[in-house]
Length: 413
Image (cartoon, rainbow, N blue to C red; front, side, top):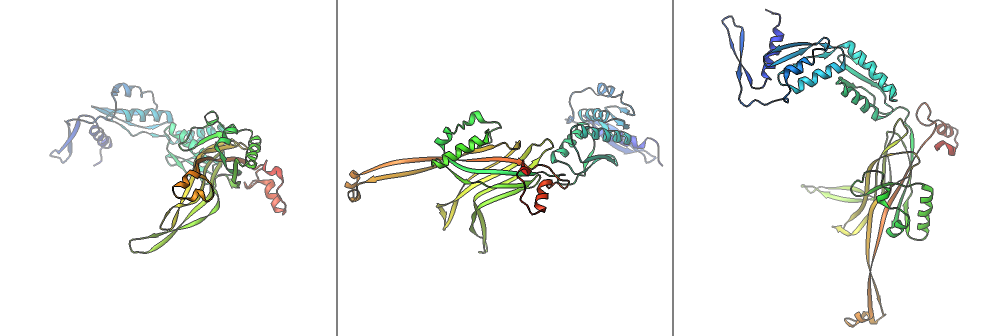
């Protein structure tokens, strides 16, 4: 037999079970109905703080459509609330006070209002390509974002108002920009580096990740002229100057070097070969934000074969590597450095024949130790392609290629 209020009775039982210092014991009366009574529990575990329940519940009585069913030691909160702010207040009270059970939901009309509000907020902060609708008892975000950060920003808005949120956006970004990276791997004598005017502590513009330094150097033209002068004087050498074109949201890589085989033997004696890259390796993963900034994950590596550290005929690899995430402006040169290499050399001068005589030959010799310190400097300059077409591939650039012509120089300005 269904009786009015039986659902509320079960809820109240659950609330009492959650109350501090209170347990429940059950038995049956002669009619077969369950009778519950409260029993104290030793060492109750508090769920909330010292907030007064009656005072907290009184602060919620101005919320429209909220029903507060109080019982000794707690309360049950029910109703379809009309605003996300009301739901947030109820959730805060239920989380902070023991014995209070929250069964409130957001009214569907309120969800629709919230969806329209978030849609207006997205338009106000420049988020395009996304739509917010109501599906069931949740907000549903659909569309293709212009940036992956846009979805995270919408999620933060929903979280601030405690709104149920489902991400139904498509992967990828609309109208992806083309980004060109001009990179220069340069090894510079540390003495010449000081002459160049690179004083790292004064040039830092980002936090200093362990192992290398970051800095902005402007103007790039003067820097390039000075580096070229050092190359001509033998104080520096340009290892490589690759240029990589990559679409926003994708990854691109560059390798100039080779591979060495590394055999491996398992427990059954089977031999497998793993190939290890060496040389100059560069990987970039750019993403252009709505305001035109270029957020890029950069991994660069310069490695050489080290015959002095070989095991069973397999040489070792000397590696200098940088991995960091940057937020850049187009046409701005960033320097990654701090990878120092030190070469020690012993120089012997001797008199021919006399210097080769055992023992006495030491009198006709002179020794000098030389240390050469170089620093690997990576110059990175991103550039944005202009005039995007509707397909996101670059309008003028695509037009030039379709006519079998070289792209005009201003296509990349």
